[in-house]
Length: 348
Image 1 (cartoon, one colour):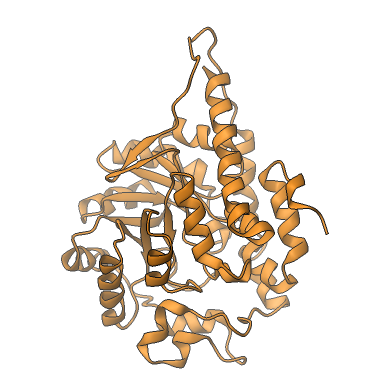
Image 2 (cartoon, rainbow, N blue to C red):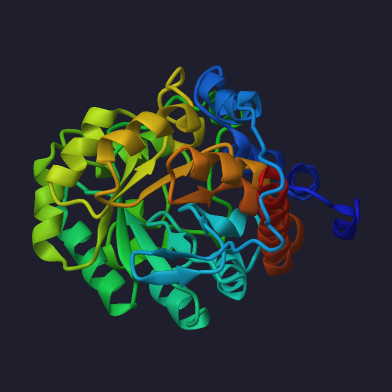
């Protein structure tokens, strides 16, 4: 088995993660919808964007810190909400959160996490946390999740809006995905339904999502969420400038340009391609973040140059987690920091 100390970039960590994970778990992390066109484009479009550096700009030192929704961060890179971190490592979301805190970054905890929000918050008390949620058919479940996020000290809520149904993830059809023993949807355990813990072997994850999620959401749901909390609300899953404008008009405190990592609508545009028009439409009224395809510090630079205030990474940190636990996530963040600093200096 390859030594994690030999990894020098995110792609190296993916190779290590693949060695260490079961094929089913790796496919769950790595896969996208249908032909995985959007999954591939998220990375490919970054590679097609060329930088035009300036010279003799006097950049003897560069600063990577930013202020974002009341947080001072040492770099404009946060951990995106990703499900079931324990598929990668036994320490799961706790390891990820601690690494984010140590790096001066932040983590957005997923509702579909394998560690309860309260445990993550208490185990990584110095880490700024956001909480990602869905609006469920039973809104009292969503309401209670909001209360729990507030009580746990979360700084913001991130409402995922691109999942009225689950995308057709063919890797998980070929190798059916079921949670291993000892891993559950921990945030939903208290709501008293078997579906909240795990799904039966005869039920697919898509069926599970279909039963719990509200497929008929409208902008009213954003207004409702705004009415029950004072926390900032970011809308995640926006690709159209018109939707970004509507989000701001309905009380959103931020936008996350996202195609769910290419896991929902295959053929949807790459997030970095969608970013400039959304940033222009928002016109700095609220922060704009993006996720999808970020693998290098130059990707971070390109995203900021095209209008993002910060980026979120998903698979990139999961590969570090699966390869080396908390230390792997820390190393991924430090790699991106170092690459970003170098890219800023070389770009002038």
